[in-house]
Length: 119
Image (cartoon, rainbow, N blue to C red):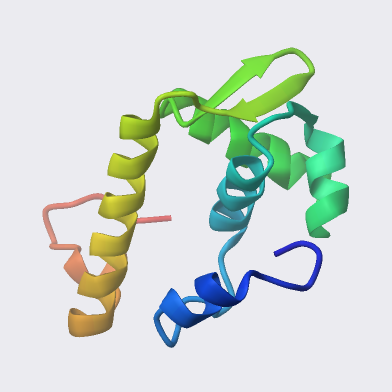
């Protein structure tokens, strides 16, 4: 979608809200997945997506810990483990659906007197 266009079949098959604003992590994963034939420097990803390089680096590190990206300094690429990527996507969608149905959880709302204060 970085070109400002998509295939008409993708458009027709998409849910009504599928193209709504994505969070930064989703945008990075989608970018890497769409460009899975290349590895990228964090600064280049940041530039392409209009994000701060430090934020992209932090997100990539978290994705790497979850096995969703590969890293060979200074380059990053999407995982080649399709099952892991699909499982993460399904879990993400499940959480989004739950948030839509029940509202987002706020840790502060779940806190009890016995718990330490959430910062």
